[in-house]
Amino acid sequence: MGRSSDAREKILTAARSLVELRGYSALGVAEICKAAGVPKGSFYYFFESKESLALAVIDEHWAAELSDWTRILGGDAEPLQRLRQLFEETAAEQRAGQQSCGTVSGCMFGNLTLEMSNQTEVIRERLQQIFDAQVDLVEAVIAEARERGEATVADTREAARSVVAQLEGQVLFAKLYNDTGLLDALWANCVALLGVRTGTPTAVAP
Amino acid sequence: MGRSSDAREKILTAARSLVELRGYSALGVAEICKAAGVPKGSFYYFFESKESLALAVIDEHWAAELSDWTRILGGDAEPLQRLRQLFEETAAEQRAGQQSCGTVSGCMFGNLTLEMSNQTEVIRERLQQIFDAQVDLVEAVIAEARERGEATVADTREAARSVVAQLEGQVLFAKLYNDTGLLDALWANCVALLGVRTGTPTAVAP
Image (spheres, each protein chain N blue to C red):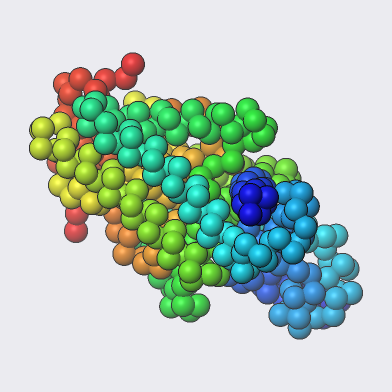
């Protein structure tokens, strides 16, 4: 049983890096098993299909990211400072990925949305839940900032979605140009999108 | 020769809808030829490889989009009004696509960026040129608006990139949720990102 759990973990790890490098469609079960160093029989012992493996990869990645987002956005810092920290940690993570594999891999959820949301309904639903959760977390912080009189935006839900859309769009550019410097614009854009009041300390550039 | 050109056009049309539906990686040459109704020999008469077909699909799509963007952004309306028109026509096009094939297909260039920019250097370069050109076109309009005192943004290049990033991010959401209503936020976000002066007539919601 010990070895079996090991094999599942190896398959997940291999699938995750292959998905990050080349997307989902280009992936074959044989290739995943080869990269994981497990026999093909093991794959179907743990996963019903390539689709159920994709869901497991998505879930594992989201569990880790959710824990980061919750730590950052639920922290003790002032609300806008927490949003800023989210952008900084996102940029740091993309830089780390670039250093380890040579190219900016972008956001797994954005990548999979554009690659396959129109192909697999169950994956589309999962990705919708993930982005809904991201928007929820960001919205709570924006609502706090507004209560403190630091943000003037009227619709906190729409503002939160726009902040996440901006994040996805800039990460797309960082991936395309293989340049994490493009993520430096995130904070200033967030300040603009939220109508942050002039004079709010966290709104000032470092 | 007449029939040959016909076959090239049929292959391009079939490839374009298959790429929009399912992306590039999942596509096979045999399938494209079947959808196009041409023998497989024809494919290699016109295209060296699947990659060169992808470049042709990208180029054809960009030629059409560039002509739209140039018409709209180079038009006679006031500069901010032209940007607004760009968002409205983008939304209308996504709605038309949704009506014809049931789902929002999103932006072909964004889709291909997230699916394959890390796989094929020649396609990455082409997509970079396209997004550079989009940012150029938007930047020229922002610079005009700033000269007229309607936009207060400091760095027109960065502002233009942020507007295009916002567009890509919201189109990503429109695709994921199959809901073009999400594109309604584009104009208000653009007003915020450009620091449009209060009182500028085009800044008012309809």
